[in-house]
Amino acid sequence: MSSDKTIAVLGGGSFGTAIANIIATNGHTTYLWMRDAERAARCQASRENPEYLPGYLLDDHLVLTSDLQQAVVAADVVFISIPSSSFRAVTRQVAGLLKPGVMVISTTKGIEPEGFTLMSQILEQELPGARIGVLSGPNFAKEIVQRHQTGSVIASENEEVIDCIQEILHSPTFRVYANRDRYGVELGGALKNIYAIVCGLAAAVGAGHNTQAMLLTRSLAEMGRFARQMGADPMTFLGLAGVGDLILTCTSDLSRNYRIGQAIGNGKTLEQAAKDIGQVAEGVNTVRIVKQKADELGVYMPLVTGMYAILFEGKPLQEVAVELMTGEHNSDVEYSGKLDD
Image 1 (cartoon, rainbow, N blue to C red):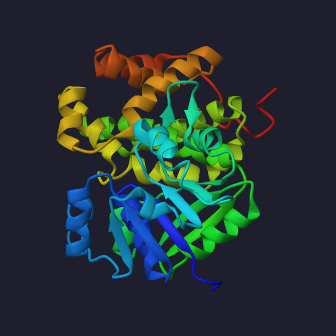
Image 2 (cartoon, rainbow, N blue to C red):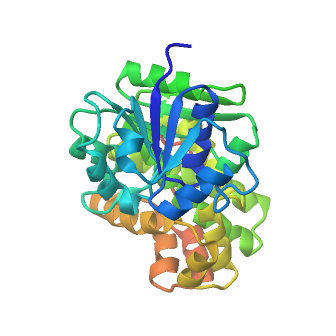
């Protein structure tokens, strides 16, 4: 391993805590920044983040702080693990504190409505001198800290960024793969949250394995269709950051978005479901944003359209289900080259 680096992780949620702890365990000077000073002090003293990862002891070398300058001023790499609604504001806060040429990595799976802006695009706009990457994949933080074998993806056009992130995060149970399609990797991470809501809802109303398999594969088709229209490589969606993340999020109640779908399928309103979950479920806003963009571009996305009708127009689930099954026919495999004429 090369010389130790100074790393900052901004955002004291479950995933930010998990990756900060991996990096600290690997011997790097690591700061985990939390907005709430009282919470940061409590976690620093107890060596635990009970709100997000209860019962998991944090490495002694991990420093938890609410002092943003302390966290980032000497950092060689900054990970931003903040909900998309606050992402730009936090990025602006750190803009004047960072070293020249710092690597800044987004782990946030969301989209800013204004201009359909992904998180790494916000980094480009707000931190013009930074070297930028995206970390995404089928990664439940709870299983990461329990040392389940886990794979993730670092996407960047910069080879030094890829090499550095692979090095500082690598462990016997956490492996990081490379991808150069940053936009596609990031888009996959945001889109799959929509389909997790769809699959959670379907599970709640008793959908069988046939239905679940159809939903997963048609979700992947929609993701690839939309991504290609947006300039990403549809083949990216066959990797960990695409189908891998889709399978994970759409088949487990560890996913906040899946649980939102379950709650709605059990008769709760969107407001009740969000309150019960108690954490940010990015997929709800993503449904609205992607529906608007798909309509604008003329991209056929029946699952997104159906989910939008249920969440925001009060349309009955059964009516939407009938429309999905009786809508226009289209090809099964859409990117083989033979069916795309």
